[in-house]
Image 1 (cartoon, helix red, strand yellow):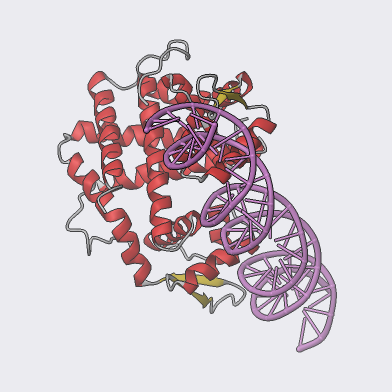
Image 2 (image 1 turned 60 degrees about the horizontal axis):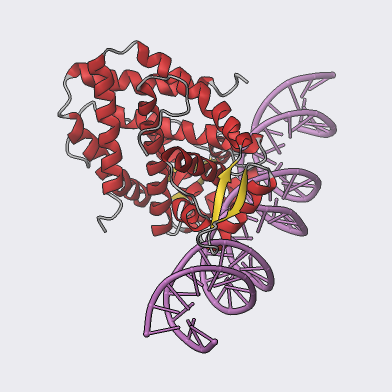
Length: 159
Length: 159
DNA sequence: AGCGATAATCTCGCCGAGCGAGATGTTACG
DNA sequence: CGTAACATCTCGCTCGGCGAGATTATCGCT
């Protein structure tokens, strides 16, 4: 799971960084799946919850349609996701008073606690680790992650 | 509703790093799903292909059972994954001559090309970006990713 | 205001990924 | 040899997600 320079021409040692990043995403996915099944949910439900928590933090009003777009799930599937989360008491449907076609999704405290139980240790661990980094190192990490994000988002429509 | 420092002791600005990392994993997952559907596959199939490519690079003999373990899918589901990949011509079943119960999975060139088409731009872009990092910055990134990996892997069995 | 066009969400019927249980073929050990 | 352990595959099923269309609410136009 590390190593591996026999195939890719000469990418230099930086390729190791990429594999490391990939390993992180894989591990993250596994934790997420594990968390989902521990709480009687599916991967999509967890992703939905995260989207909703992010939206709340960003002050964005989350509607059913918006959520479906974020998840890449069609309207029927989105209704099902919301049904499941509502049944578990993690979210509530609230009709928008201004545009009564819309259904706003309110995240219940229970879901926030769950989210914290899930991410808390990871955030805390990451935070603690970064305590051992000096400013320029933290900046390097931030620059790296931002860059990767840009590369991935950019490769969306370029081929 | 921006800040939720209410629960987690005081997370410094490093929390931004964590959210950035999470955004990367989300984006990565979306690219993977997109790639999967573009090639008539599902997320699990792509993950399986990646596992098999990793195994080949590491010189590990991949069997059906091993793959199922990697994917967290049971034997019936694993058979289905292999069937789909075989039907698409990405892998081939090869009976192990030494233990004829085992089915070795050989990755076909076609799948390797596909993998390269998928990861190539991302690896290349990451590589190019890292050209702008000096040694200590690259080391910081590596240390960060290794650390996160350790934290995530460690939170697995702390039941 | 009245009315069709448009938008947001939900219902229905179906497909197929993944699971549990058990069948089948293979090897190891007495 | 016979029997236990093993690796993989087959069968039947559940349920997440999709396409199509119904339902309810808003908007633009005259």
